[in-house]
Image 1 (cartoon, rainbow over the protein chains, first blue to last red):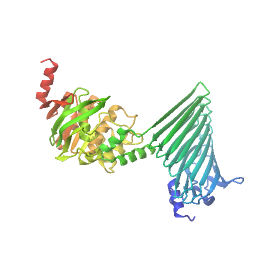
Image 2 (cartoon, chains in turn red, brown):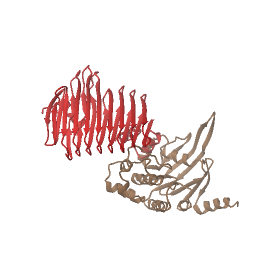
Image 3 (cartoon, each protein chain N blue to C red):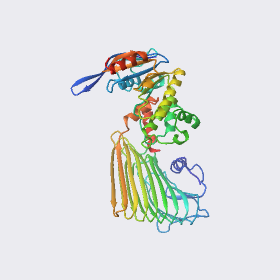
Image 4 (cartoon, chains in turn green, purple):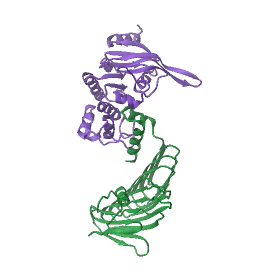
Length: 307
Length: 233
């Protein structure tokens, strides 16, 4: 697997990969798979009808990982990729995805990744997705991930989704439906700067008895950037749902939080919290009394907030 | 030695100005334990905020070991050897106790060293080290963590703004022991307090009233005067 330096940097940033990882993997560079391995329990197949993968994880698989990072280093490349994950009952896996774009040209580079997870009974998945952009060209670095999670009875999904740097425009859509006793936990970390635009949309349907979902978004909007957070939780049964948007706004940025709850059962317990504000001055002062300059104090607070 | 010379501090109140500190001069000697007391709104907290550089005086100068630090920023004073434990500890989203102790120390310290500071303030170190400095901690826990950061910072001049507020009796006794120990370590301690046990630790007590020094002297003299006033003598 031959990689350019920028592609190595992307894989390192988005998937923490410095070398060929253990377990199953598929590395995609500029629209093509450049390295793939299935394992005894995890099979990766190319989709026939459209671009993307079907990934099958056998029932009862334990403590395995799948890496499917994507790198784009060509200006003007635009792709839509469909990846479907079929996770067998009682399997426990970690899926590391993510996409990075290096664009030093004048044309937009775009990756729309549509990931669907069909999680079997009592299976557990941890999904880690990082997005990253760099390159000084005027062409946009655009990433639009769509994540669909279908959780069977007793299944659990933990989604950790980060977009920390360099993505000019993103519309992030996450949809989930949960059956009896299923659990969903989503942690989103987002930072925008310059004139970047980010929209994050969640729709979670708690269909089953005792289904629970927590959606937490922490974001920082700097410079002239603009963020929108929309989270809808629908309680269709005896269930618990909690959404939280916590944003730090700086400079001339704008942040919009639009939480929404729909209780369609008397036993549904749904909560939303949204807080937007600048960095509290007393936090900066406290760190300055411990010896940090103002900029360093702000950086500590921001890094901590997004940690 | 920390010295304030002829400090005035004004705040705007509508179209007029209100004087919070009025021609205030004070010298805390090296290794002195000074306790500042006085009624709410008398100017005590403003006084220590001016020492730390959080507020700039309208007039007057601040000196540390003879060096004029009036125009220095908060972090510059911190680096020169002044620290301040806040009356209301600050909460953070995402910073844990270990992070804060590392920042206070100015370098990455071992977990064992961090635990040492927590133990000194009576916290079960392993339980607290990686807890967020946030709403999930009680007021008393936050207060003790605040003191732990001052111990980690290890400045020559340590200022405490009502350190006893919100902590239980056992922790209060422990705090008194900490102050005694710091005194033996050669620290200069300036403590805002209303607690008799802390007032009795002082070499000098300063009573502030309406932005001025009302009394400054040895504890027995000051306490006798305060008690006499309370009894109508």
